[in-house]
Length: 305
Image (cartoon, rainbow, N blue to C red; front, side, top):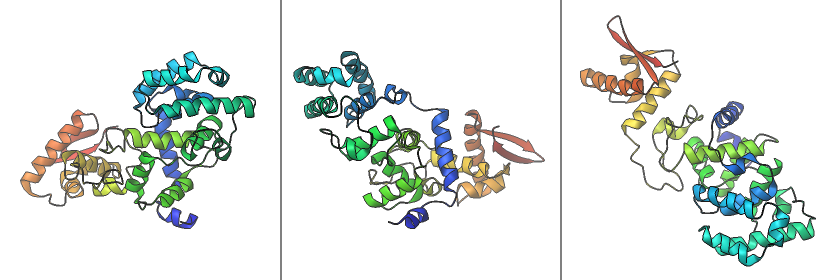
């Protein structure tokens, strides 16, 4: 896919898309200790630990590992048996990962004089470090990476911009979106989006997804994705209709029921429809998202300021 073809998958205002995601991430995100460091050794440890392991388990193991071996020199000098025993004791998955991490530490000390290489290509020379891990370390330690494309990122791009289910297409569109020189914040942000808002069962409104106004899935209600092969129950649900109310009101200062209803459901109409919509607005008002008032015999809704 050429750069022009990657751009064609996206809305015209890509700068607004980038700004919205970074602002959302910087305003609030999950606090993991490896997000508070740019130490390449600590980031490598976190990346290897995070492979197919729940992040809360990684958090506990990460602190314990660094207390025991705080620097790459400490790990390189450690007994491999001790490292594997720690790995097993914390249920971190395949023991080969512990062995490779130990060997990578030895390489950094012996071949690089204790200083980590900084590019994704050079980092792949370390034992057990594949393209994804190398790019993550380059991004988060040195702000020198390419766009990270994991399962969560693929799901986000597929849903938001209808990127074809093709690895090369995902790589190309993700690379086009990546702001120059900002791989650290960008890759953290888009992975956070996939982890807390665009999960297999999405939480678009609850997580305040910053891409709702551009998202194809949010507009259509179809949240299937490469790793979500069947249509989720979100389609046609009350939660989906809540999202449509928010999306409609975000485009207008305020709307009456007769104006808002058809934007929420195609079969809106009649007294039954009005009562259903009033109840839905009542839920949103209780959540502090929408303000509703009676004016000149009409119910009028707007987003809560």
